Length: 166
Image (cartoon, rainbow, N blue to C red):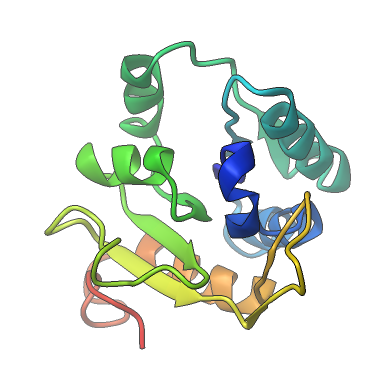
């Protein structure tokens, strides 16, 4: 999971408690360990650490990745990446890792993941008034978990695995 964004796009963030609930649910339901990645800025690290604190045993802090090549290598070795519509999420899609993309006011066609990447694009329930430093998007952890569950399922378990969630 990659929760962070640049400071200029903090309105795309989802509150860390939502990500923590997702990590706890994935651990409890599927036995999946969540690795929380972060960018080089202090805000990203703070968000990642908050998720790990709120999901003890279910979420772990990823090692720092100093370059996009390192981030791509990390994402190429995980089963799924969940996060807001950011560059790192598109890196995950580019290396073929399934993604759950969390969108706010972003155009889903313009921000579609790399073609052929198994994905679900989910729209926020609403944008918080004026945004929020820790999360400008309000998303349902249950909806995120359902999308993750579908992408983590064996092929054929839920029918079509790739595409845009409606």
